[in-house]
Each structure stands twice: as C-alpha cells, then as structure tokens.
Length: 291
Ligand code: SAM
Image (cartoon, rainbow, N blue to C red; front, side, top):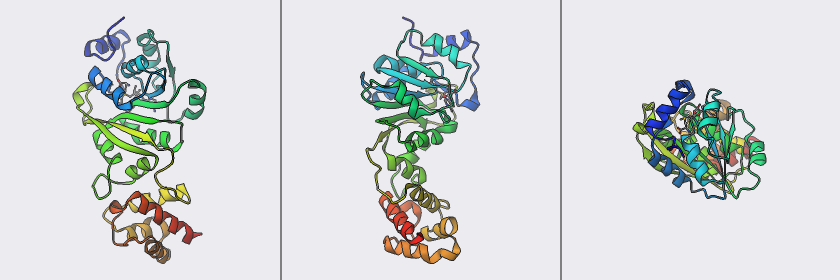
C-alpha cells in the first residue's frame, strides 16, 4: 500500500503527476498533516457503522482517512480537474463515492437517501472551502438533513463567531442560526502551516452536534430569522432602533415598543446582549401583533 496522501512528499508527487495547479478561487488549501486529519476524525466521533459526507475532497487527503474508519464516504467535489486525480489516489478504497457537483446546488437530501441506506448515523466531516463556509453550513442545517453531526475545518474567526455566547463581540446572527439547530463547540486550533498553500488566517475545527429539535420553539421560523437578523443589522444601535429601521418601519414604532414590553426586554439593550430564548419571545410577540 502506498504512503498516506496527506504528507508533503506524496502531495507534491500527486500534484506533479497530474500537472495540477491549485485554484485559489475554489478555496483549495490542501491538508498535509496526518495528525491534524486524525484530530478531525476523532473530533467527529463517527464509528465503523456510520456514513460520512465530505465536501471538497481535493486530492483525497481527508477522504482516505475517513474511508479507513467509516462504513461509507460520499464526497462532493466541484472541480472537474480533480475527478481523475481522485480516481487515481483513492483507487485502493471501495467504500467511497465521489459526486462531481457544487454542494450548494446538489440535492443532498435525495443523495443521502440513495447512498446511505444501511448506515447507523450520517456525519459531515470536511475541510471546507473558506469562500463559501457560511452558505454551506447554513444549507446543511436549514435543509434538516438526517445528520448526527457536522465537523469542519473553517477559519478560526468564523468558528469563534458560530460558537459564541451572548454579550461577546463574536456573538451575532451566525451564532444564533447555528445554535438554533445544533450545539456548537470549537475543538482544535490549527496553524496555517499544515496546508498547501498556507492560508493567511488560522483555522479551527468546529463540531456541530445536531439537535433533535431546535433549541427554541417559535411560531414562525422564517420570521424568527428575520427578527434576529434585523436586530444585528447595526451592532451599535439599540434593539429598538434596529427593529424600527430594519424590520417594522417608523410608522409601526409602537408595535416594536409593545412587543419589547410584552417580551420583557429593555428597548435600550443591544442585540448582542439577548439570549436565543429572548429573541424567540420577541419574535413571537411581534408575530402576534403583526397579524
Ligand atoms: N479535503 C481536502 C483537504 O483537506 O486537503 C481539500 C480541502 S480544500 C480546503 C476545499 C475543496 O473544496 C477543494 O477541493 C475545492 O475544489 C472544493 N470546493 C470548493 N467549492 C466547492 C463547492 N461549492 N462544492 C463542492 N466542492 C467545492
């Protein structure tokens, strides 16, 4: 058996053999450190009975480590130049399916149904392309896919924002959106030196454990999302001002006042001090008053 893909020498050899040039615009920063890959696999906690979805296999560094431990791996890769490379590098493994598609456009739900019919749980494990981290995570969460967890390498700063608690500068609409669907934990801090080419920022491994039910129950989910997004539109403004300027409009100021009063929230507070439960209460009061 050949050496693992994720070593500097083997990666260099594969890139040269296929005359492959990395595309910055596709977020191609490949991992060349086995310890980090093992750290990602351990953080995910999947078992040999589980299926794993990977987004962006690149030349297969992580895919190979996933295939050694999982029952089956399904990997979405957008770059057509990588398909023959993956066929070559992953040829020793029979439990990998590569799907040549943009994950943002793919019908992930039906692919899961057809590709994972005999696994215990399904997990996402990926070193994400940084230019589309948030849209990919939100798609995976909002589509309510039957996932147990999502473990991803992302920019450290984004991981901190997702896992943030109220009254910190990192806390915002991304924290609420992710924590509504999952329990978020930053697992590892990763230096830029374990990638080729090295990204300009540090990275982190984030694990999202999917909740069976969302953290709070609200009358209308889309409205709840609109409400908290509006409250963070201008972080320096009070919650009252944000609601008036970004949601209800000046002529309905009294509606915002009444909803804040009923939800027992001081209108002078800033969005970043509100818990997810308080946003849910506010959203429901506004929903009732609006209808
Ligand atoms: N998994 C490999 C590793 O860890 O070395 C590569 C990770 S690299 C950060 C991101 C990968 O995602 C690249 O292979 C890139 O071509 C792919 N990619 C970028 N945008 C994508 C998209 N929208 N859908 C699927 N794959 C995408």
